[in-house]
Image (cartoon, rainbow, N blue to C red; front, side, top):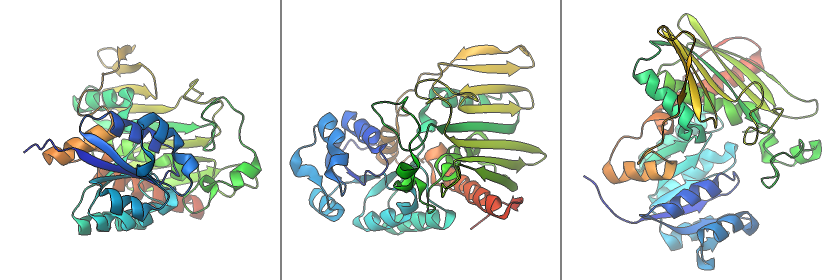
Length: 359
């Protein structure tokens, strides 16, 4: 049964500036209304205030006041990675559905706390992974489901950026200084580092490509500049049956991928029993190689269609219709991704292969 209510949405905690994009989607949705936004520093909310026309009466520095006075149906959360569980546990008792920006959590124990809090509240949880909305990856997933490259054997992922501290007005800016890194939560050992920031992308979308299949064993190594307290690079090997998949993360790519694709390119290469797909971030085409066309051919990416053009639209569709949340945004797939991330972090610490962690 479909309902056509007006969804009341609040954006709480702007630590991760993807909040601007998510609230932009809410602002553009015909059946959504931004009833409140909250962050301890009002300056972090000014872009949303301006771009989404949020009146002063709906802007708060205390999150409890925001929820209690605006009574949202849905809360969008973008806290620092290490605080995801705390924030979900804070807002869930208010009876709100939650869309939280990636990663799922800093670790599997926190992810399970989030699942438990939302289950107790009898409300729904979705985890947004921006790469899930990139047409190259959506197209690759469709071709996989159609059997165009046979059974998937390997997923190879490389992704990252110039660094998590970015001047959004100048994406070509030089790498931040050590002092800037030490002052940022991105470089906090609890929830920081390129592995936590980017491996979840590859692991969760990889789980989507593998249709929920789990690896049995993980080997991971990390690297980074001296004096930096978290990793700025990681390489993870995941064993799926007889074959190995690889996931590379990097803070400090040669160029900003939003301006110029670095080398290696950011994105995926998928290898199946009967072909391969190269699907790179931001690109308007993918390359499909099959037994019929071993030389490969370039294919235009799919155009995203409603209700799957952005995370807010899709989440509200699932709430309206009662449809299952599927793919990378689902708790099921995101939790498997978190298992891989946790196991990789442990492997890097122990400097040896580790069986996939279950809790």
